[in-house]
Image (cartoon, rainbow, N blue to C red; front, side, top):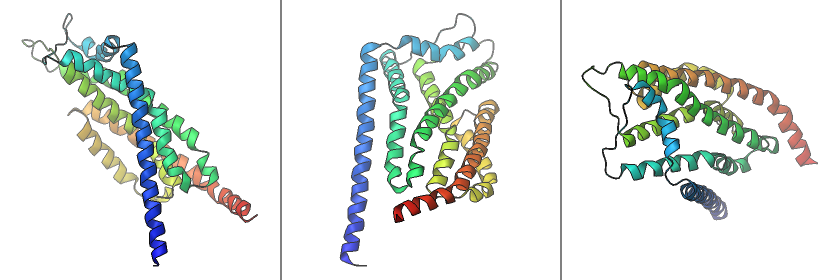
Length: 260
């Protein structure tokens, strides 16, 4: 290999790193701007936390309230809630930056999938959060509190509860991104639909392993996370099959347009 070829590869690698740095920096700036705006407009974020705590409060004995065991918890909790809001509101922008980073290596007809993928990724993440909040939390907290002895009055800590909620939201939000991840892998030719079908059994086992690791040690939340992941994997395979079916004709048209 000549020195010019090696230098070209090195310059290309450095340019990719620079682009990655710039896109990450944009994401950080947008997050900080949204965080500052949300904090100035809604500094305490109390109603948001009350809404997040509602599934737990409903499962506790009547009149029971949550407590703050740390001196700075009443200050840290609103900050964490504000950060969560800034992340969710800016999610479409973060996803677009990720897609724009990989798009230059794709065909023009594949680049047109940017908007559908960004929109679907955002919606799936929000659906995952909603699924966790409305369907999982109620069953989970009722199941956990049913084991509490009658001589004990549960008094959850607000900061510990918020950390638990954010962890679960991220777990379910990312899990619901499975179809998008599968489609991106097919588009970028990292893997074929045939391979995805062959690895279906491994994915199912992996989904239950991941669910057992990231969720609390109860059957309800583990099944609630693993089963949707498996179903969404099948949705991703179906979408990938449609992409592969249309790819040969579109790539042939793209090659002809380049030759012309």
